[in-house]
Image (cartoon, rainbow, N blue to C red; front, side, top):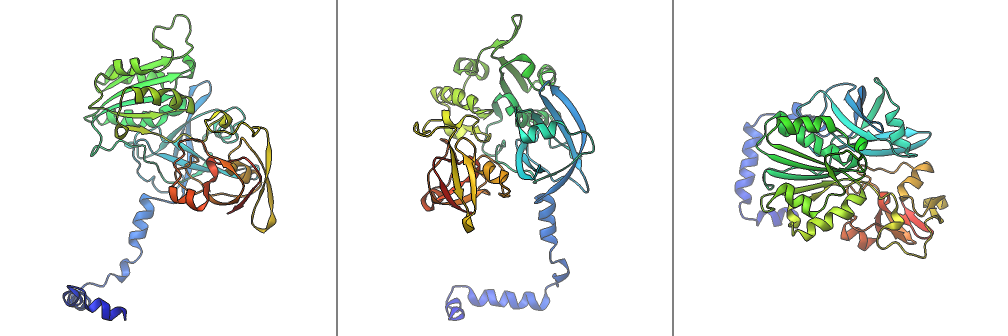
Length: 384
């Protein structure tokens, strides 16, 4: 039946003639079978074995880890992309994404810059590592990149805290390769000694005509001569002038987005000219709009898994962390609700997802949730 239908299609006889000729006179490519997959795997590996070759102190709470391949070569990446590191710490299998802060032209190594987080399981582990330590990562991923096809060559980058890392890669590439772009960086921090890459950024701004650097310190020392307070609309407009020929990139903690995005909206920055990096689950999720007042952030709920197994889950902790601590290895990459690898089906119960989480409408329709940005509001039943 299928072949009868195919014969009625326009061009069927000519196509079959070409197939017959190719089979008779064409080369035998059987020995090359599998080479395409090998080439794709080199460019987009599922896992990369890494070794720490150098540890660089940046601030009292921040270090840069220089990572080299344990074997072979590193795949290429675009500035602004991240890698995800995988860990087994005290029996807890987990993962964390880190933006690459080095430039793509440094093909021999990747650098990630890590700030210590109070009671941070992974950050404390990473910052205690020394040269020679082995790590496992994903290949580079993420879409927080400059696209010269659709973006104008003038970038306004707004960073907060460790959100500077993807911009550092962009800036280094632009300056090192003398690319025809202009970058204006507004970089906010609470204290002066929190500013990562401060000396290098000052030097790059002094020596490179295509880069301007404006640090903004919220609580500086009394004799600080630079910008004070928060990054706001008047400062952004003063720094970048007209808006029509600019693309805006924003990366930092949730507080930066809560403050800066309304400023950009008030300035009538077109949405198509605004790129926001995913930055993980919010620290104090109960302060997010929409958190139900009747749910105590200290409440604990029971999650029922297939086979009748149970996991205890605190309300204010992402569901994926509760599952990991109970011995369940949940696939994940971005830890911010974008990659969909940690998607689970919610059979019963209520969860909270912070505003702006990019969950597909089809997932919402059929009851799928992203465990990395889902918080239990009641007892749950899920399907892994």
